[in-house]
Length: 204
Image (tube, helix red, strand yellow):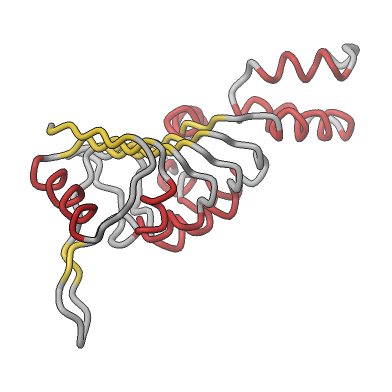
């Protein structure tokens, strides 16, 4: 492959997974630049693919290898991402992590967030960081359960999706328990949040 022209190398790497591109970068100084360029052209990132490769490489230390900071540092190599899928994270994803991810993916338009009963990884108030995804127009949330927030001197409240994010969305899809779906829809109505186009709700 070293004898191939750079244009062909990029074409090949575009069909490869993210970590394959990273491994290719390490083969030579010339390939380092080619690998970086191929990564910069990536438009989608699915954490499950990233995690699968990491588990194969180091099963015993997978939780260390998959902490949000390392994932976000990796996303920094792909500034043109249009879509991110986060699912099955092995540790809690906090508000600070969401803010950092928003800064690492400034072009993001579609965000898919999937949580299950067996994998509860969304931290309290993490969704407040969605305001840092300035170009986000399509948001899909599955399995989320808003937490009750209590702060000294404040009336307890349930966390929700920020107004600024809701107003910019073209499509909001919620696939959660009936109670969660009702809370989100009621929040939209009570606060007069103007939605541009479409809200899809599914009780699971």
